[in-house]
Image (cartoon, rainbow, N blue to C red; front, side):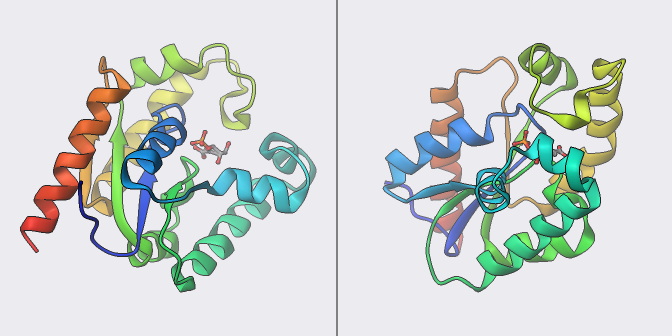
Length: 179
Ligand code: S3P
């Protein structure tokens, strides 16, 4: 079984890159609990993320993300966390995410993201006239940040989740062996 550096595993990447579903699969394989920062915020706020954006605005949501990361970084628990796609963007969040544990970036091309999310209505940032262009612009800006933040980068385009999972497990093992 793959061993894990640090206490948590932090899955980062753009919306639709597979963080939630890979997190669940990884949780079975590593026998570690899994959580999703968007879901935690939704349950605390008592509303969906899209409503949080509508009612309180994006800055309010971003502040909740930072507070939650600070909380996770202080916890002694060992978990897998799927993070919202925008969580690593704020500079202070990058330090917090790295403090939380091993960071895995699920890297996807804009075409893959668009294909997966073209019928999605739950992402407020993609509710715009040209979601394809929005994905491209956001991803171009975010990809270097995700790369910088990550210990492990996994390309997900055109791959089955099982294959992605195997690569994650083997990279975690490699990382452990190099420690
Ligand atoms: C966001 C991604 C979403 C959610 C919110 C903002 C972003 O999470 O946090 O809609 O800025 O990319 P997922 O990456 O889980 O879709």
